[in-house]
Length: 92
Image (cartoon, rainbow, N blue to C red):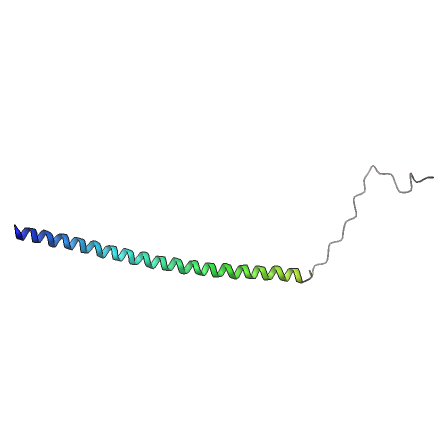
């Protein structure tokens, strides 16, 4: 009886050690993945900050630098068909 109990205890202990080892490996992988995600997020944040800075500088440049494209010619207002021709209606 004592021997069977000791053997059952050893089997249970081996099972628990196997589970603990498995959990440690799983936690290690999760920790590694979390570090990787943090690093990726930091890189994205740095790139976003750099892009925002570049866009702000471009906006400032555009405000300070005159355009090299000539201004479009302004169109004369459309002539209305029902208006009187010039010189009419001005008689005194």
